[in-house]
Image 1: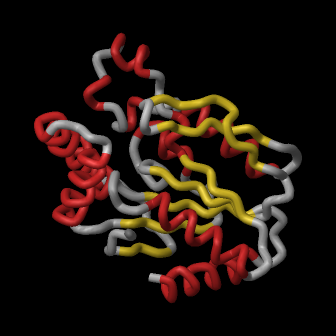
Image 2: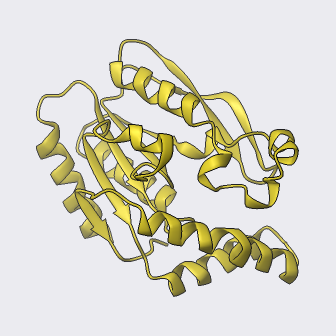
Length: 210
């Protein structure tokens, strides 16, 4: 995958030209390898002398207390369980590149978002945004159309996602019953929703990253 990452980094640089701020979207279903690819692409850009920062969408999960009140805790991760307006505001602020923007980060071990946990500096030329719904065509998420300068869609086969999701939740020491509920009751149905309602990307990869 290193050669592919280098190839994508080259394409990003070609597209960026002399842009002061360039936004890259890495989208895909749960378990597709978005965060791994975002980190690898940032490193590839830095190796070429560029400045890059990763901005995860996961920091915009609604708090569990709100999800419990709305009966959505078991479906955490579906489009309706994110602060879409807050995410759109942050992305628009980041695009301006005129000041530092503090963004939230999701702590998966505690299942909560931590406010103002990561700075995005105006000095970072490339901002790599990764998340499930960056190319989602439904609801308020559709307002992201045209926001990103370069987009990547990770679309592994469902059976690959299933295997990776099982590994994820077992890694968090969930029981087999709880892991099964996460995989089949939420993550895989959500993955299908994302794959079936996506806008075209500049690059589409059908391989899950390690």
